[in-house]
Image 1 (tube, rainbow, N blue to C red):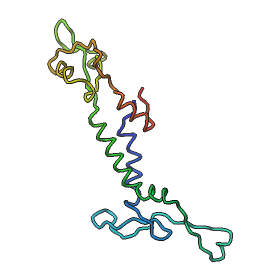
Image 2 (image 1 turned 90 degrees about the vertical axis):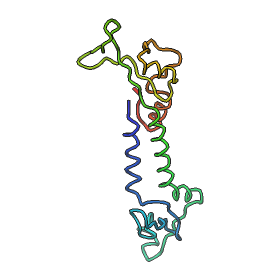
Image 3 (image 1 turned 45 degrees about the horizontal axis):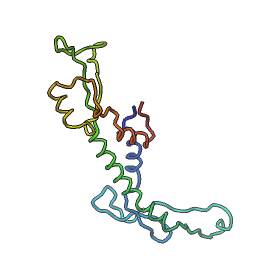
Image 4 (image 1 turned 135 degrees about the horizontal axis):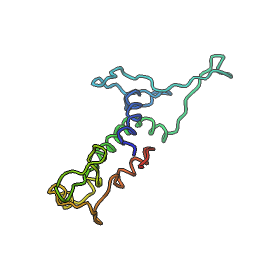
Length: 170
């Protein structure tokens, strides 16, 4: 199964490499607003420009960049919106962690091993599994037989996030 943190990393890297937002339009240029507390305190760093290298523009003409108001809004808010979405996904992913349940020998109460590793009986989602089942696990009373209330790992929330980010849940 793909790891949500590794799927988010390219988005975070692109956001970190981009000119910090928020951006605004200054004539025909998109620029960022000055933020003297950030890593980029320079005012009005150009974010986008339009160069034309042929036609009548070769003789000293100029080109205007035309972007619809809807697209301007999307571009202006892209850095801050992306940062908020990444933070929201990370917050959800931090809640939905696996609870690993290992098999115990019922005769002597010791862990069952396979290839020098404790044998995993099942994995449940901590956020989705009812508290009563988690209490049974903590008290050593969970038999691993499963119930209608067990929410196995990956839970539907983690599976949906992973698939939406282009990962696999296998």
